[in-house]
Amino acid sequence: MPEKLIIEDYTHHSGHHCWTTSLKNAFAFHGIDLSEEMFFGLQAGAGFMYWYMKMMLSPFIGTRTGKTESLIKVCERIGGGATLFETSSAKRGYDELKKILRDGEPAFVFTDMALLPYLALPGEAHFGAHSIIVYGIDEEKDIVYVSDAARKPLMITIDDLNKARNSKHPPYAPKNKLLKIKYPPKIKNLNAGIIEAIKECCDNYLDPPISNMGYKGIMKWADLVMDWPKQFRGLHLFGCLMSTYIYIEESGSNGGGYRNTYAQFLKEASEIIQKPELNDIAKLFEEVAEYWSNLALSSLPDSWPTLKKFRELAKEKNKIFEELPTGALKKMQEIMEESDKVMREAAKELDSAKKADIDALMKGIKDNILIVYEKDKLAFEKLKEIVG
Image 1 (cartoon, rainbow, N blue to C red):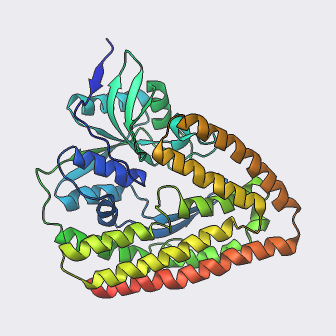
Image 2: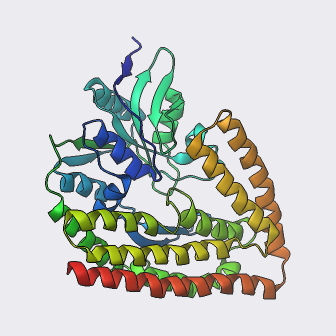
């Protein structure tokens, strides 16, 4: 018999990044009201990772902590707890989701964002670590009620949800994953959690476990970027440039590779743990954010009209999704179609460009990476001095 499982008193809150927006929405439902920036900081969010495997179209340029286990730490630092549920069975995953809704709880769900229709993404833009909150399912009407980062809640079909949850595409196939949260009756004293999270963030960055993470990863990127035109051609080289811009400046980062978001966390943290010197470090991270933005712009610069055009379209599409005006999906689909044409034109231009022009483009990116390396590392070192 079709079920109707809808949390009527659920309130949607918009945000920037999917994980922190989902956390904010889930905890706000239980009367625990923290800013998205505080959730980001408690996750030890700011960081770096350069990741590439042969099955990927282009490298992943990550400027935040990407381990799902970090979400469990956030819940613990607030005074609660969490476990990660995952299964290869779409049916079991769907049944587990409905159990959470039957208990009157919104569900923290992982999906492949390329398979969420309302994002209007190209079919190859797979990324299975995108989180949403599901706060209702009406099986008779075939409606799933969803909170994402946009200003308004959204609706998809049950089939769309199951496909997005059960996707097998890399990177980070979602595997029907759910974050099952144990909510505290109230927020515990955050002092210890904040200090622990800041120390973890600094350690991850300044003493990374592998050479493609933290400050070492940024330097590795600088060493590799000049070889991109040899390693990647046409659409794949364009994908490298596009990913650099999108992951730093769009994609939920709030601009500047999440450094603006982390700066705001440090400002809030300074008041809670009574360390006013964190405000000076916050200003340093705001300055670093500008260098990250300059790096993003250098990958799709004004000097290449097709690259500039794609950048402008990406920014416009992101704004439409955030605001969700009337006819948003249609507008986003039109932008995606135009972006696809511009992307293919840009790929041809990159393939036929003179070596000197390509070298100049890549050198501009490398120069900005090296500036970011210096400024970013300094900010984390100064932060480490304060928290020990």
